[in-house]
Image (cartoon, rainbow, N blue to C red; front, top):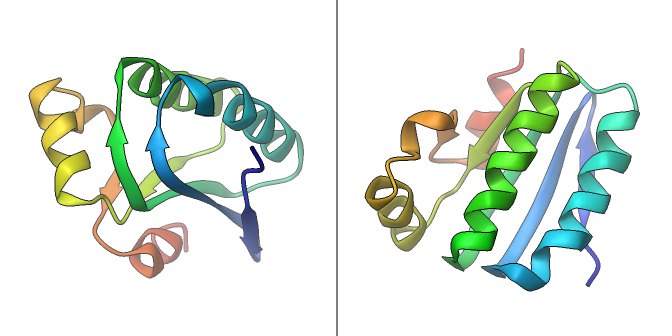
Length: 111
């Protein structure tokens, strides 16, 4: 699985699609370690095309949060679908992330 990303000046946006699940763990972990190794002002995970997040996917999001904190790279989540919002609410993880309704809003929040 290839994880697409693009840079908006010093902010990197990672595009997630489909399900964030056990199959996504290693490709996303590899992509995040590669992205964070470079000079970044911030990282945005765009979840606007994510249908479902299972428990390994939630653990992965928490790993991304922790890895970004360790490397002093602020993290934002953008475009969460209604289903993803419910999953974060049910698991009480919504407060663990800086979430933005729109991708542009998340990218601008680093300015």
